[in-house]
Length: 432
Image 1 (cartoon, rainbow, N blue to C red):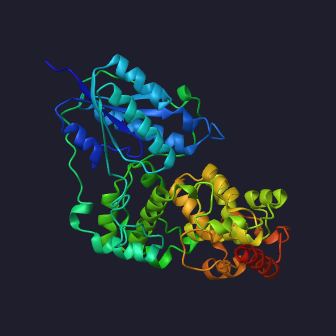
Image 2 (cartoon, helix red, strand yellow):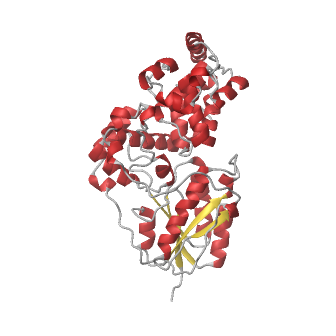
Image 3 (spheres, rainbow, N blue to C red):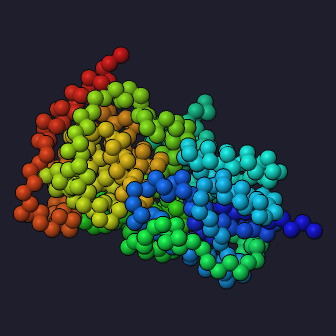
């Protein structure tokens, strides 16, 4: 009698419902052991042991573990390098196959290739599935098969290709897990992290917010964000569920979901964007990279209230509304002529919903070096942006309570900074 098991490896899909890879594993002939690996290659790069993202993951895993226990099953967590963990697992258990959902980041692709080769040498199958996106890799491509590099035609093709089957939920059986008395999973303390102020709860789609998303999303004081960034990043909500809801409720939010997939396929097809401009000629820009000015930007001490309020919110909470993200990113790249990679790294450290593809894509959009049809001379005026989107100063006063009495002079005059940026960009792009 074959007593082999299948492993389902959770990564960016921390839910039991509507999970394609998990559904495929549970539909196999082998009982399934669900596992999660606290990857030390990732954790050791984090700058602080107080990290809301790690706390969120641990709470989501705890929630899944408790659900599994009602089926006399449980989640098995590990801490270490994935290749070493799989060596340990395969030495201890008779594993027939490993299932997971596909990841599109360069390091993750290499990680999975290494694991697949290791397992193949032991005669163990490795199956991966599309789950975190509606369309992946080259499913949305030009007529000649090449990837889209501009959002608008990509989004048109995305919508034209979409069928109900693409966002239909998958039913996940609960009757084929390995039966176990597994009681405990890793706590934050056992992996060297501290509890934070983050609170995991099962993500919900709020029609009251999403129905008005197009009207109010640009007004930060109204807080009309869906606050689903972390849920989408870590897969505690299904993209299919989100897409179906967006189709019913708000096309602008659907476009935001498509932007997410657009940046993911850009990262997949053009991995050089990690560390380099999508448009190579933008790597010729002579950034000023004044460290003092960069620190003032990080601390929210630029003297531009909307920029500073956004940075204060980010530093305190790990969140910033999208409109404000655009303004503060543009300010760093254009007003201060600080390399977009500095800002990208700072956001990567601070954002609760940090996602490599989206963060990189948006920073390159702000710098003008990425996949954007708009020319480089789009430079946000932070004062005008505040007048348009925070006229009553509600958002600014929330995050800078002493705004009226602050004695922080503007770090640079807008017109001067704009002309300087135009000159520096123009000189770099005119070089042959």
